Length: 345
Ligand SMILES: [Zn+2]
Image 1 (cartoon, rainbow, N blue to C red):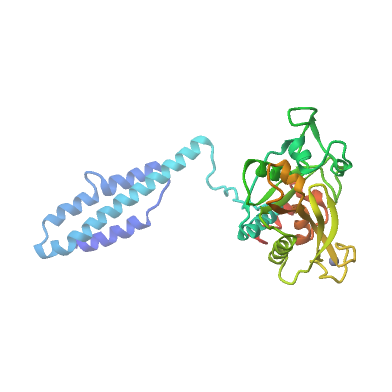
Image 2: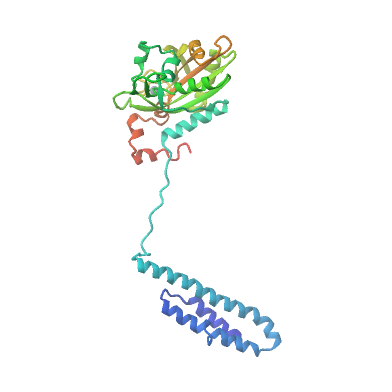
């Protein structure tokens, strides 16, 4: 008898649902009230035989817990619904979608470059974007009035100052100077960062861009070390079999200086628009640190030698992703930026 009642009421409780407070109150009175069904059943339970008590006791307790849990969960729901009604919210409306962001392609390439040089033991060094003349030019072997200063159109901020005019840095070489001034060899570091040039904005030039420079200073560092380091870097970044070649060049802060080309990653040397049908593309400048630069930074150039290199992250990214217009990097068009969501993460 009692078991049947419990089964029947269990089905009733399971089927019950409401978000109206008054209906829920009727449910409470019917089952959980002082004169409710559960009270009646517990009274009946007292009269059953000891054997039945053993089996029914557990069933009865579970039944009571079921009724209480049902009541509590519906009570929570009706309270939420009431709050929503009071504040004019419509809980049936769909929620706002959650959009996953994407790393900027330049951040992806920068991270990849940093990881490759990390494997060779290069640490990351950083410095200020607003620099004085000493750190941006003079210490790097750009004497006053030297025509080499015209190679880089500069955004000047303030004339004069303890260490010369103040300007937005035109390259991250200034970080190399700061590092060498502050420490003692050996140095093995890369300097990623944003740099500024006073140039008209076009598909191929911008007033700011990003560089990664590298510096290695120790005893007996040679041009062969430079070549092997950069060769390793190119194989890691563009894949094994990528060819490199060095062409003599001129920079005030290195002697000898070179520009490094790699075999075109797009046409594999056959000739295309990117490599202007030469099969080669220039990706960086490099050379042995000029002894004057070492001396300017307080380093004995007879004991120590070093190499340095520098590349534009935009250029590396252009070759990797075949992006033909530099302006896309800074226009914040999500459709452009999102394309690179899965390519390297
Ligand atoms: Zn090509």
